[in-house]
Every structure is written in C-alpha cells, then in structure tokens.
Image (cartoon, rainbow, N blue to C red; front, side, top):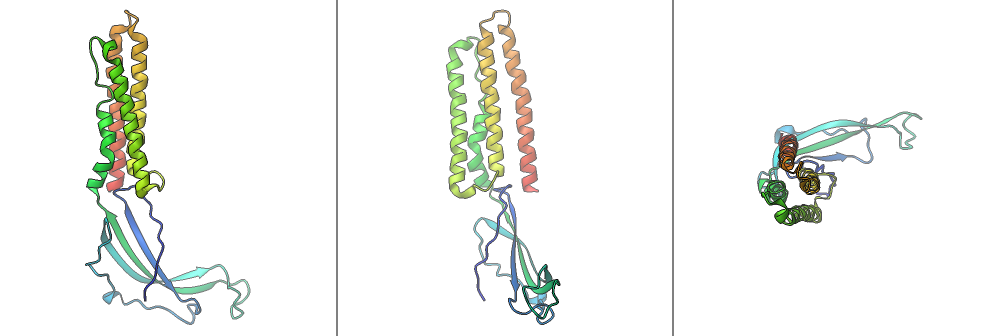
Length: 224
C-alpha cells in the first residue's frame, strides 16, 4: 500500500526543529466491533537507507489505538445519539534536523551587524559620525534583506529561531541608532560632551548583555 500523507511542521525552532510524523490508517467501513488492527511490532520498522532531506530519524513507533467519533455517522445499527469507535493503526516517526551550517549561513549577517553597532568612536566624533550612521544603516539593511531571503527560501511559517535572532538584532541596532542620535544632540554641549562616551559604553554594555542572553535562551530551547 502506498499513499500521500500531509503533515503540519512546527518550524518555530528552525533550523534545530524536531518533528513528529504521524500516519493513521483506519478502515472506512467497519467499526471496532467488526474490524480491529493487530500490530506486528516485532517486525515493524523502516528502511535505514531512507534519506529524509535535512533530517535524521530519531525514533519509530507502531501501535493500534481506538478512536472515538462523537457521531454515529447515520449508521442505523448504532443507537441514536451514541458514539462510534474505529480501530486505527498508528505509525510514528520522530525526526530531528541538525543543520548547523544552515544556521550559521542564515544568522551571520545578524551577528556581524551586532558586532559593529556601537564601536565606531573617535575623539573627533563629529568627523566620523556619518560613517557610524552609515554602518548602522547598512547593518539594518543587511538584516532586513537576510530576513527576506529566509522567507523566500521557504521558512515563512511563523517566527523561527533565525527570525528571533534577526528581530533581536534589529531592535539592538535601532537602540544603537537612538544612542548615536542622543550623542550627536549632546556633543555640542561642552559641559555634557565628555559624558556621552560613558552613555555610549553603558548602553552598549546593557544592550549587549540583553542581546546575548536572549540569543542564548532562544538557541538553548531550540536545541534541547
């Protein structure tokens, strides 16, 4: 017997997602009082040569369950208002994706943007402020383009792990833009000018700690 089966994939932890594939076989005519599957668990399995692109098979399960429907399907043999039960043969496969290379490929623009957000500085800040804004703008553009390319590659299924990293990087970079704008505003004030470097360092330290913590938590949940 061969068939085509549809399965919903939860890609919220992509590219370290784990999927449970379920195949349910049920007789369309006879209920469990007339027909019952009996699993041959000792001789059930899968061909270990099968390659499922990007996934590794981590487990296999074959069993029989009884499924109850809250209707008689109009069967006159079943009393009115009673439920009907059918025997189901359940086949399950546990798949796990371990695509470290893909994760690095899709997330490295975000981490590059993170590394260069705050660290362009000079005693003559106004002479390089254009370069700092330019780098921040390029970082934002790079992350947005990378998010778009990830969507076009077929991962547009809610917010994935890569999306979480990229969205966090966007927020981190926007805070850097706000910090830079504050510095430009205060730099002309000679009394406050020297303190803006400390403001830059404090904001950079706090946002970096928050950024790395958020990334560590997201990746930790994905790979465990």
